[in-house]
Length: 73
Image (cartoon, rainbow, N blue to C red; front, side):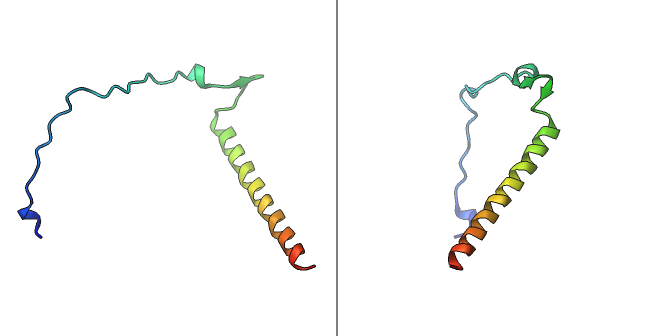
């Protein structure tokens, strides 16, 4: 079936604007400050991401070596 044989549909403009309207969160409100350390900084995000990846890799190694030891009995 060709595209030319299909009828087009005219879209009407939205009857009303979206009701989901939120004000952006202020920077002062979203910062978690403990003893002067900003935990929402990019450096903390990168460091915690690297720590998470390393811990995940260690967990996989523990499972791998445990499974190998169990098979080697």
